[in-house]
Length: 492
Image (cartoon, rainbow, N blue to C red; front, side):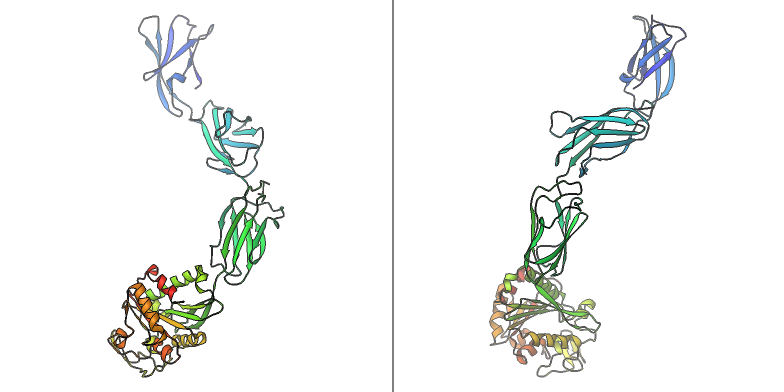
């Protein structure tokens, strides 16, 4: 962009001179009284940091121009802004009164323009250049929650180079603190949980927040740290609560929020019971919902190669947790996985090789059994309840004395209750709702071999607990939505 000066051996005001690069031409002017030509190169539109061959042409009136000089020139490398106190897309949380930007070369001058998006005119600013730093001083505070565009133009470095194109930064200013995340969902919150509410910016550490930040429904200790508010709960089971933050909460720059915020959740509705341990020491876990009323019990995966039953029971616990109205005035116990060692190994038996559903003290219990894959010596255990999983389940079941027991297996797509008993009607209803066969009154319940030591037989015949077996349609796959209504119907 600078003027190119060409020295002559004598002053010349007779001839016309111009500089040509390719097809582009820039005129030259004679400097009066001096043997010097001044050529403005802007019309050539040369790029920075490139080499060009120039030709200096001389002509007189209508004569064809002649080449009087050929030379190679190198244009200066462009100046670059390497960093700034605000970047494109940034949110400015502070109340800045100036912005600074640093170039890669010492600077001579620059012009900066700051506009609010949608405004008709630019804002008042003062631009100061010192060394490599451009400081843009603002005439007043920026408005909050507005978009701005800052443009640096007409920059000239000390060596005469400039920007390739105007440097443009689009940014916006924040409002007061806004919630960006809550660490818990709408249910299932531990009764002693640390509920963390995260804001988009640091909070004032000097503001008294006791009247702005509250919780209703449960007791909690409220603390503040950085950009977070932490509620440490001290609550009971299945209790709804609401977190509230009133407008006026200050950021660390004393910018106040302008809207109220609240979030409603609920503490966990179940207790978790470790009712025993497997052969390999895995915890045997039950989930209990409700505090009073008759008990309905659901169990799965007594056979480890039937994980569909375990998956269905886990989905059922999630449904119960999310919908406490299902068991108002009732209690529900769910054991998703009776045989965790078998599930881990994908074996029908436990780690001792015993079929747990042949290890209960029923009439006619035998040690050596027939199973789905044939004869198994010792498959029923060394004696009834010889296995830790069976003993623990027996103890859990008798302690709860459920009004109805549902035991989930695979595969068969059938439901079987106690013939003539309380569970027969429930079995028929469940089968009808899911499209399974009701084999309650079929020979051997629809199975083609004799079964001894079964858990469901023991609960019904020895403990007087109405029991039913549901054989799912797949060993691995289950559809909770297909069973959801039937599972719920068994509570009534």
